Image (cartoon, rainbow, N blue to C red; front, side, top):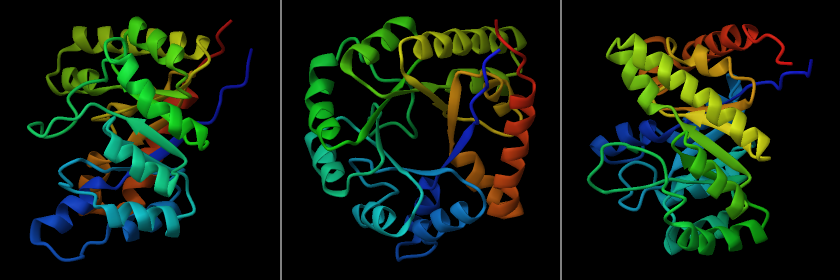
Length: 255
């Protein structure tokens, strides 16, 4: 029996910036939220600098890189503009995600298979500066294989379809999506990739994903910021930690 790795929690602070931007000005400060998340037990901070700057701004990335001691995971589209910003600030990791100005939130994973050449041009200079590369993908075998072939360090498995099935109370589809995520996590780990997961996770859905031993990090944002409105960030993070640990504790040995 092998030792199961600890499960890390990355807190995405994008939607503190969304709240700030609703009125303009500087408050609430997403960098202060990141500092509080660090105090409350987050293992990393995630921030998505979108091309339209709808929430996180350039100055937020600059301050997060300078002021927060936790590893910074910068989510970004695979564009030259974002590559150059990342090269300037050198976050711990860049998570490349698909991006459309029309979408409300990220709607699916990267098409690594179809966009390998373009992605490679973005990835190569970042890896040369020791920035870890994460690719946000749907839990599909061909996307995992293409990610490994590109030299990614990490894949982050898109959990949104699973979470939507849970919200719809579609038990059969929930079980199918859990099985799909588990198979993808195993495949990615066997390919030598570090496995993360995220999108749409909440207290009720996180346990099944936490129970997958190959997954070593969950990135959660919108739900945690929403829960913080009612209970405060310390309690929201503590409760998420409890739910994650409950799922992790359910892991038996895999022979």
